[in-house]
Figure 1 (cartoon, rainbow, N blue to C red):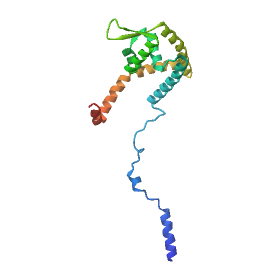
Figure 2: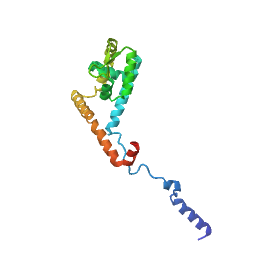
Figure 3: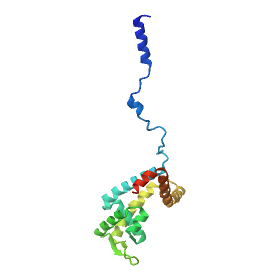
Figure 4: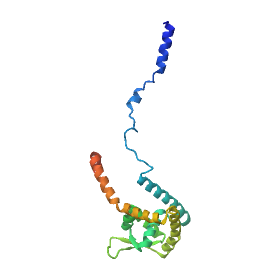
Length: 200
């Protein structure tokens, strides 16, 4: 075989070989291999979060534009209209809002003369909020928008599905304390070192 043919054969062999990975590529792990991922098509907390966030954002835009009322203020108004009078601690417990956020909400509502704040006759440490006539009139205006939004939101369900949904949501809501307890156990078992750092 001539020298020129040997060179051509060697060149063809080299061309057919796969390129050799660089050192950086061989040292980099495949982050997508072997680990668990969240299936967003079936992950219920994601759907609940997306729905709640989008409903809240849409409601807030309308309530602010038309009534100059934010979504947190509206949530407090709903409880006040239902309960008659309620403390910031009770609002925080029922809705899940931070107590300081509820207190700021109450202060803003008091300045707008939407509520009155008085010490609880049974517990002098608590300040009870009550809707004023002005606050009640504003509530009665907004509630129509809120109920129309709910009506359209649920219009894709049958009456039976609607009732089933409410029953299921109540059961899930009642199960939240167990979710927190289970999370504490899981973290303590799997991430004991990080958990100790977080606890000081």
